[in-house]
Length: 194
Image 1 (cartoon, rainbow, N blue to C red):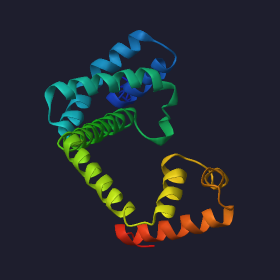
Image 2: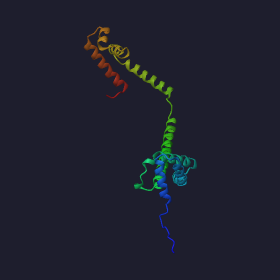
Image 3: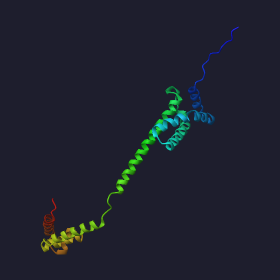
Image 4: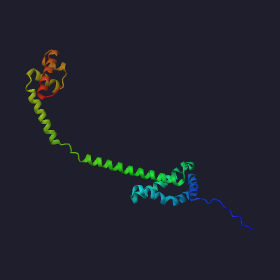
C-alpha cells in the first residue's frame, strides 16, 4: 500500500511575518519580539546603505522598529508584503534623517556666516553722526535769522506752527513761508534730492 503524502503549502517566512505583524497590531509583545528578530538585520542594512554611519544607522533602525510597533494597525497586506512595508518605513526614516542632518548643517553654516558679520562699529557711527551734525550746523548758518529761528523752534524744540508764530509774534502764514524757504535752503545745502 502506498503511503499518502500530504503535499501542502509550507508557510513562507513572509507569510509568517505578515501574520506576526497582524498580531503586533493587536498589541502582542511576543509577536513583536519575533518580528524584531526577523527584520532587524534587513532594516539595519537598508538604513546603513542610506546613512553610511553605524551609530546613526543603529539609532534610526531602532526608531523604525518602534514605528513598526506603533503603526502595525495601519499595515495593509493588500498593498504589499510585510517586509516591504517595514523596509519602506526604514528607507523613508533614513532619508528623513539625511535631510534633517543636511538642514541642520545648512542652518549651522548660515549661523556661522552671521557670526562673521562685522559688529556694529560704534566709533564709526559716532564719527558719522558728528560729521552730519556739523554739516547741519554749517547749513543752518546759511539761513536768514528769521528762517533759523523758525526752523529751530519747529524742528529742534518741537513746537507746532501756531506755537512758533506765537513765540515769534508773527502771523501763522509768515511762519509757514519762513519754514518752507528755510527747509528748501537746508535741503540744497545738504545736497538732499527731493
